[in-house]
Length: 237
Ligand SMILES: [Zn+2]
Image (cartoon, rainbow, N blue to C red; front, top):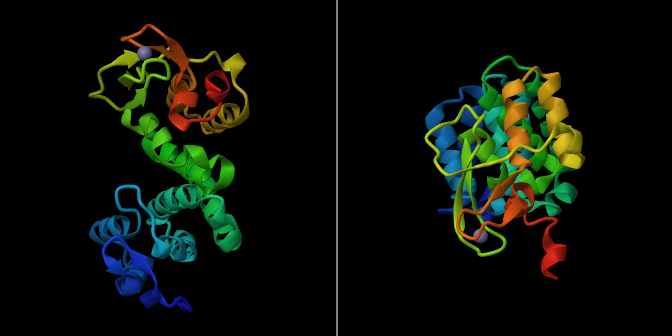
């Protein structure tokens, strides 16, 4: 893989990024879980991004293009980096993002686990469709639950998505949003899930965009707004 990037001038979680090119080369030729884990830990360390993270995007695009067996992992990592670095990343790497979006869209049609389908959806969100959903806010769809602070009393609540394949979560059940009420990103997500025949994912999405009642103060609120920090602001100001 040709690479004009001067990695020695870039940084990741553990210092200079000289060690990134061998990882990218390995993933482009003979991908394995250990190398993926090392790359994730270096350039998306506990949700933090670095100069090397953004520089890796064209390489992740190439891996997704070259290697069907590594495409899902490549778009998942790229989607999170893109979401974290939005909107600057759009100016820096428009072609890589376009290529990654094409790879993520192709993943939606791959037969397999609902969780993998949800990862591809999350990647598309992070790659520009709705970057505020590209990181933690969407994780509950895969995990089966999430944590959120009540916008009224600020109590941290555990939330459970009853329809999710994920399990082990206990907490407040969401009340699903009726499909007729869907608009914007919620409608788009649901459309993709139904088109792909993923009824289970569609049901979890209805819960993600539904409401919950705080078990501390009783306030009922929209989970999506509380997770992304969007909407809901008007009431406070
Ligand atoms: Zn509350």
